[in-house]
Image 1: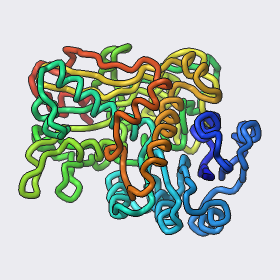
Image 2: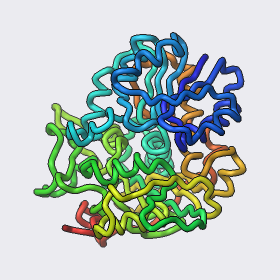
Image 3: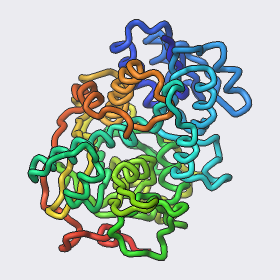
Length: 436
């Protein structure tokens, strides 16, 4: 089997030593990159590095000589259409995996695309018998879905509720009204950067797109009161907030190490796929669904720049970008926070910088959570090569957790009495911090 990486930024480089470790039989690894930043890592691990970004008018010509039936394309880029690559892979019987669904450059602005729309396009290609294409499969989206499933099962054991195999019915029985993808990143490299530099622990371009260019999206719970600023997608339980982005939308959240935190409500694929998984339907309509959204507190250096952007002290045109290459302190804590009628239950991973460095070179805590999931998922795909287009919700969560556990630091469930308001079933407005 040959592997081709589209994109060779922080995740592509972090993934390379893990691919060599877990798949020593690989015939070759090739990377198509938009710049030279990862060339040293590529040379160290024998990756065939090609400085040639994929575009709508060249991707077929570039991929055809290097991929054939039984190979795998891993898309860890930005501004490269997931749908175009998936379609090409399907026609050429090449397996496909990505960490998020992306349009071609400018697609979010020019076509007013949302994560919901991109997911609908991808799901339109579903069909058993075709080669496996596992989409939106990193840490989140991806690993977080497996945390949701495991967290629900463990909460059921605590509450003495028998699990019948249906996660939506289980969530209803547990009284789950809100599911937060709750993350807190405290990594720091203790370096000083120019004031106009946006520093992040993963792709700055990817984060800016989610932060500034896409509207707030979430799964909308059946318990929620109507809001004039929340609009449905085509009658689905997925919603968006026109005119609001993650930059100006903050919510109350909770993680074990930090406690209550202020987090940005960031648009993400998994809010729709998890909401779908946990929805009960009757006669074409939803009888139960929880509210689902991503509550993210990025590293402090990123938070500082977010504050300046929000206060218009800087514009995006002036911003320089830097991925934190070598954090020396801190951790990434990522989990599913299940708000239920008895409190809250968080299930997830707390991974420190020190642990990540010991586990694999060229990784920080954030990238390690992503690449551990990718490696585990490749192993699953090799056992299931003809599943067609699927999401993490379609994959055996026990297999993925078992295969990735060694790389995720402290993985556990934590009970808490936390809730944003003194009510049994908090509404979205109880979590929302800035009402403007």
